[in-house]
Length: 251
Ligand code: BT5
Image 1 (cartoon, rainbow, N blue to C red):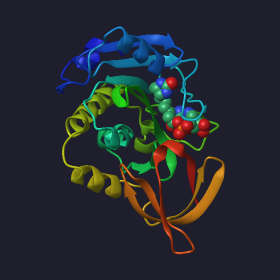
Image 2: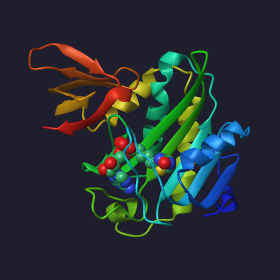
Image 3: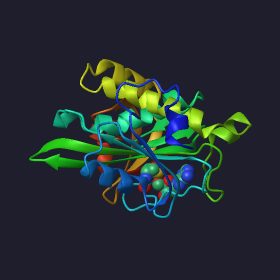
């Protein structure tokens, strides 16, 4: 993959106006942070063929066989109300579901699954200046042609039965990120609607692990800002925001 091949026929306003492709790095999020601190413009996208320290949330790792998938981090510099910060993760997740042309669903907080198998993961990192968010790195790992064989995961190639062009998927992904990015300060209705429609969890019995504690219940609602709204056995309703949730498992 090259910046030129991705940019050819790319239709975006902001995202991917500048693209970097590296062979090898520790994490594309690190490369994007460095680029951002060096002044990279809003929407700069960094792709890598291979990561030596790809990261997930909460100290977990992201693994991806070299040269087979999309590992990308996007520099975002929105003017964003602090309450809307969770929308950045939602943006990445919704964009993946738009880009892949499969019945992909969002497993809160940051997994994209097909029939329960993980296709992609989102990792957002941010910088705040005096309580205002001013810089985000949106990292996306998307299994295009391979997935780690030791995990219950899937890839686009596996779902579609043949190898996929990473360049075409990369372009679709940048275009989808660009579209949701443009809606960031608009009405919440379209976010809420898409979030509910594409949720893998709505109405299901789950167990949520948060800060070492486990809570069971039925998922009453999914909200891109409030998180997961759980009805407990006691009848009480409690919501859990994404940032503290270790994982959600089906019961
Ligand atoms: C995530 O974390 O799912 C966020 C992953 C974000 C990765 C991208 S790649 C580009 C950018 N640069 C980075 O360094 N990171 C981002 P989490 O929800 O914590 O899930 C991590 C877990 O997913 C691991 O513990 C594994 O169980 C599983 N996993 C690892 N690699 C996978 C893969 N390729 N496909 C499916 N599952 C995987």
